[in-house]
Amino acid sequence: SFPGKVALVCGSSRVTYGALAAAAGSLAGYLVDSGLAKGDRVVVYLENSPESVIAIFGVLQAGGCIVVVNPATQAKRLGFILEHCGAKILISSGEKTATVGEATGQCAVPPRILWTHADFRGICGEKRSPPDVRVADEDLAAIIYTSGSTGVPKGVTMLHRNIDAAVQNIGRYLENSADDVILSVLPLSASYGLLQLLVTFMTGACLVLEKGAGYPFDIINRIKQERVTGFGGTPTLFAILLTLKGLEKEDLASL
Image 1 (cartoon, rainbow, N blue to C red):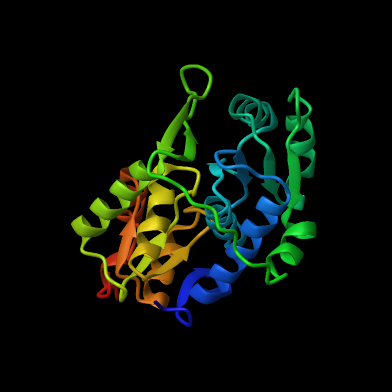
Image 2 (image 1 turned 90 degrees about the horizontal axis):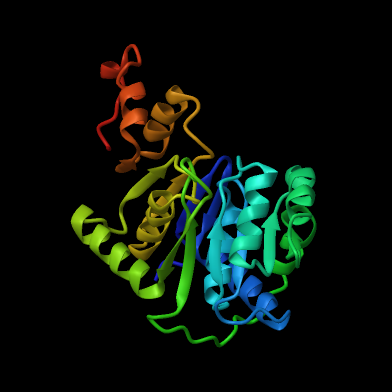
């Protein structure tokens, strides 16, 4: 509906819906041509970035199951997730080479690795036709792993029907529209962060995706610069923002 509209703002990158769709479609076509079957697990081990968004939609369009892992995850835990979900492919960045190497060493059958710095750009720029893969409501769409604070992480499975119901309900509840600009500072590995992405794109709005919430004043500046209309976070994050001096003088009228 909005191919020329900016869908994603991440750092200095501004990417349109059309560009994201083309890249995701090319990735999906590549994955299917490379043997990815419906329901195969693909682990996305990236920080919040255009590449992580393209990977999520590309895997889903290929009929695969996304397993988005927090980029701060250490090798032992990453290795457990790779082995536990039976990952066929791991998408990661060059900064994670050592961690990925140690993690895949724990796997009986290591996944194939797609590096964003080496493989990703070429694959997504090939203008490959999207595959004709039909997914059903009952097909597996995502596995989201718990923190594992009281034991090993547990994989929470989500069908396409589960995700669709959540996205539709959240969009209606928040009355989102294509005019919205949504700010997300949460990792896409968390269900809240992932759903913020999906709800925003469902409505044709714009997502301002930050890598984290480590610098509270940067969040305030981003709200002002992008005229953000919606901002979801955790109670801890909002408590920190409310302690900022001079907050009441900031122009946050768009929010």
